[in-house]
Each structure stands twice: as structure tokens, then as C-alpha cells.
Amino acid sequence: MKKQDKIDALKSLRKEAKSKLNYSYMGLCGIISLLFSTVSISKKQQEYLYQLLPKRRPYLGFCWKPGAKSPRIKWIKEQLKKLEKK
Image (cartoon, rainbow, N blue to C red; front, top):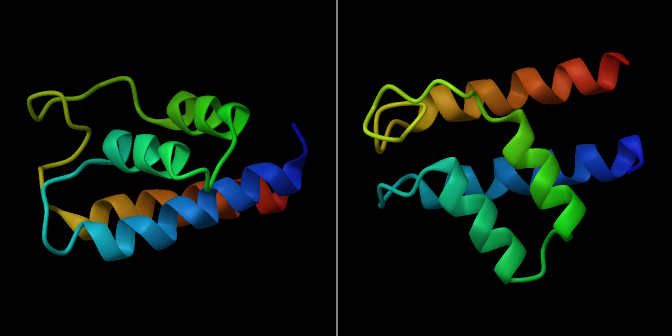
């Protein structure tokens, strides 16, 4: 997968996370599934995003507290910065 495809996937995730996390308890896994089901990202992009998610999920299966928007957005921005530096 190309670097630009990875960046596009992260940007799509950031956009949806900003809008969806305001009113629901949907985590990033749910948002990634939603993006794939609405054909916003490809299967390879979906797998890449799942691969990036932290393995440790201390909040009942969530990486961050349910409904907490800012840590998720911050994490996505960090991933974008890392990818753009390469």
C-alpha cells in the first residue's frame, strides 16, 4: 500500500472521529468498520488502521475511555505526523 493511501485512511478516520465521537460511544474500531462499510476506505486501508491501534485496551475493550474524543484525535494526529516524516 502506498504512503498516500495510508495518509488518506488516517485523514478519513480523523474526520469521522471528530464528527462521530461527539454524540456516541463509538470507538475507533467502530468508526473504522463504518468507513469500510460505507466504502470510504479499502480493505487494505482498514487492515492498516486496525494494525495501528494500540494492543492494550484497558477500558472494557476500548483503548481510551468511551466517548473521550480528544485522546483519540491526538493519537490520530501523532500517527499522521509519524507517517508524513517518513
